Image 1 (tube, rainbow over the protein chains, first blue to last red):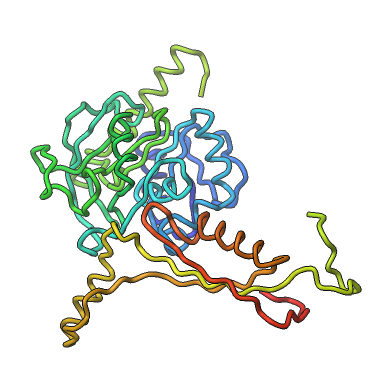
Image 2 (cartoon, rainbow over the protein chains, first blue to last red):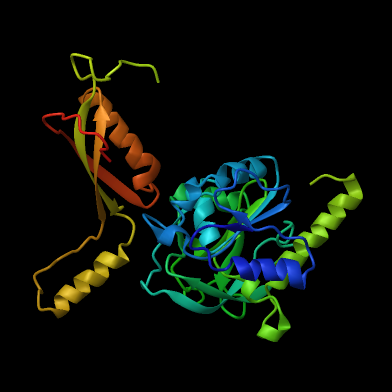
Length: 235
Length: 108
């Protein structure tokens, strides 16, 4: 879990991975040159560098991002949540950009998202078409790119989560912030870098009233066990 | 870089100083919710004559370069690589030479 100055959801992810899912977790300060052998890199939510210039723009240039880029290029898993999504966009590890929410309001509430593909390590805990209820907390979550780029994203099946109604319909009502094509989460073409605006780590324990987000992390663990079993010790 | 030396002792300063002013605005096709909200507020203040407001950012940089062309080149790169995000923003900039070039230790 990478910690930038201004990250504020890092502890939630550390808690979930470490205490709830019993995995070894490292907190990596943004100035560190390497990833200490971590297999999954999570860029957490928050307001890195106070959202100076554009959300994620400063963090994208921090020293640790060189190592994160190398990790991603080598096929390593990278998950961005909220501000982590913005950082991956600014770093060019995922395509597109974020605008202010369509109604200018900071949104802090539960939304519904539909899982668009279940064949990624990040989504294998879900089924395609499944509707999740997850909290969003962002002022700039309005995803955008040039039309041809959006078409490419669809053609490559890079849209992983879409905002929808409770019934799973992608409508204007179900789209809380105006995102192009109701995009809530995307991945790179190789499927090893994935990011979403809603916060699965804030909805991962029954005691908190909602555990819809937990299967994302549990699915990653299952994927890892499978890979380890089939090919010895590849990361 | 081992280009021209401009240490003290060199008779001619090989670098000149330029002031770069950059403006960044949301692209025309992109909704500018901030500008719209400010426009709405101006209507409420009674300025019904205001047709449009666009909200952007401006930056001023002082930069050293060998000549106008190099200064322009650097300014453009800086805009493209950091100050503006070309997916959602357009930028424009002006470059003006600052005279005279004074060697004063510890400039920004």
